[in-house]
Length: 195
Image (cartoon, rainbow, N blue to C red; front, side, top):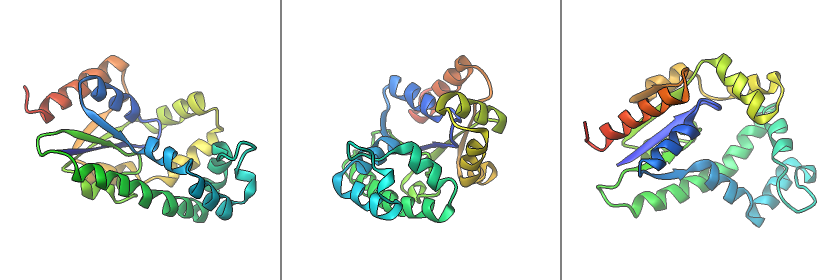
């Protein structure tokens, strides 16, 4: 069974993914795949052609902060970046899906699950969500960005209401880490058919 795990930025999705991994789930992380892909020489070159040489640092790697500032201030450029990376990530996930057995539970950890169309590859979808104020506070602490950029990033993503309508399992994360762990463990047991 392929389970899609998604959630807005700073919703706690990565923590849930980590808890599932500790419980024995196989996790395929789209962010890690996307990062690996974006570090390939051919992709770095394409990104440089689209965004200019200033987004490539002295070591020939992508300056992620510069890219964030560009794409979250320009929807057109965000679309170009997604159009470049998403199909390549999708190909990787298709290969994984084709090579799994029917009884395996594989969790596709994908922040932009619906936006990328990868929800169509999943049997069930878990949405991790939190209050917008909590999201912004976490982003400021974790990423060291401005509140304005945090708002832009959140607003560039699909609305929470839309995500709730498209997912089957809702995991609200406004409480403590212990609450989140308990909810995650319950969901995982149910997915495995345990009580």
